[in-house]
Length: 340
Image (cartoon, rainbow, N blue to C red; front, top):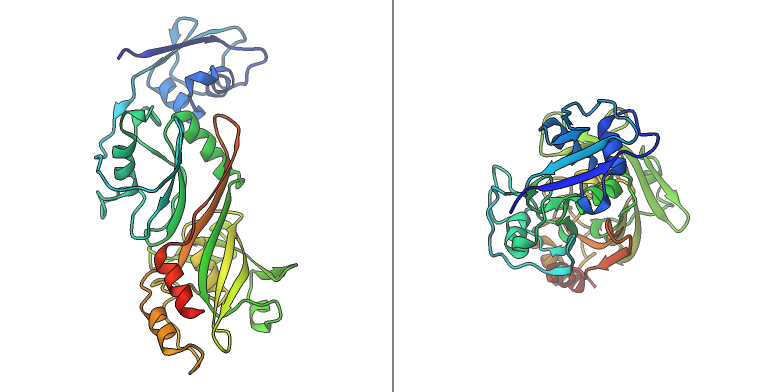
């Protein structure tokens, strides 16, 4: 296949920078994000009035003739692997999957294979139009290895750019199910005394902090109130378990989306997730609060009890409102059945 030539003229009152002007005026069907355009400029693939321009900050005049040479998407170095996937929705631009617990999203030095991306490389095959000039799935958000649930992945550069913008603007709808120790309650003076914790009408717990990597344990996130990245989590109780109540099934939703956000926030509130080896762990419960079968099921649950249940966003190409739901996996439902 030959390279694609994208040709157009700069419109009225162009932005001061070339990359911004191109991002505004490039034909929509070219599916070129501003980030991609910046790389193409630096690579010498952009001509303005017949002259190659390599500076993204260069000025451009109204009516200038622009030709962009877009190379055929290169093959990715990531190997395709025939790994079963639960696909909830798919079109030419994106795919929504229900990731099982235990699967890593993206290859890394410690997990070079067996990941969701490896599986998608095989599943999508030649239907990947290229993200950033490479035939690969575009990962715009992640969930932890031992968290199950919904993920949207871009198959085209336009989808990748549009979805990334929505996640950056915090407009994506994300609801999780989490089983935690204790029951958050607005009448609990301990919880009201925790910095960053407050309650909204309907007994909705709101946690507002900064999050950053832990100073000594790089695998953990730490709650801060200066520095770090702003993080807001809300949660409400769906179901209580035990006599007295010792566990709660929570519906948690994200205003922001930081690494380990729900796990570290709920632990900060004193309601760590069941099975979480980093932030939650196991707790000694009051004697007789759970029967023997329930206690055995609880102690045998070996991952954080967290599931990404709802995912909603605007389709980055069609503009359609999309919303998907995924039932909790069998290990979580079996545990809840044993606790009930």
